[in-house]
Length: 438
Image (cartoon, rainbow, N blue to C red; front, side):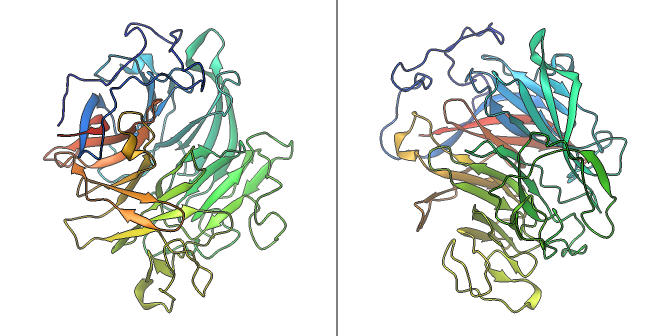
């Protein structure tokens, strides 16, 4: 099912740059469907769009030019894949570059680097973008930066426009989360892991004041009051950033919590996404050593870590496992809508993807896709708000570890992989689109 010569449909001139235009439906304003719709419920397959990337952790479309894809590389580069291109552009054409911790001699499994990217909700009229990364040189702290487009070149940011919006100290190099997504109200959601190590060794998951092991929600606008925080006992104090706490955050009036906390009890959310059709947040949370899970995000939810791993008691801790999918147990913890075990097929670490809304297969509309890094399997489910319908394990990527995901401007789901050579070196990152198979 892999077709290295096919990049997927385009409605723009393949030689066009940022000035290109895309035809729209005059009724809805959405891009005109570029596919011939496929009836029924076909099998799932993958179509190779492009290769040659360095650890692509995220792929997003330009908000107004759906044929252009922005590919986020863990090594610090964001590249624009133009219509018709099948290879990663050179570093000299970067949309954005930031020097990240671990970019040189990064070993397999490293979780530091450039991990998240988001366009401002009003982009490009408001020409701001946001990234989540660990800087080099530095102590591994998580930084959320704002940049503005270069006034003379809309295909690059202006490095001098950098503003630090948020920062979190990190006690170790793993479990950094890193996802950035604006919600429907224009607030920025930030996924934070528990700070690393294993078994929540730094105790952040039950620490209400710590921003680690949480989903955060902030207003990116500065309020003029410089902020600081110390995320744990072993974490460095960080300061020099400025954001605004949304007045409707669930714990804004509870002094026991950091006011930017929106939900608690996640271990390492890799990745989460918000379905634009239903406003439902799907959180793929990496487990410790036995279970991986998908949960539905909601304000003030406690997803259980480190008392629970999935819907299971962690290391014999007393807990209630009777809650239905997305239900709240007697301890106030929200159960996932699905989970899977490491005992099956070499599975080890979940990578969340997105909800399908492409016009190519109408029957797939609303299907959420997720995957596993080690087994290279891709899964699918349908959540109606009450019941989960599990679809089969749909495909794999020739054994290529699944490192990231994304979507296109037409609602297609993107899967990002890497090739691992005999020296356990990650190379040749690939961008695939989920398509109907035979």
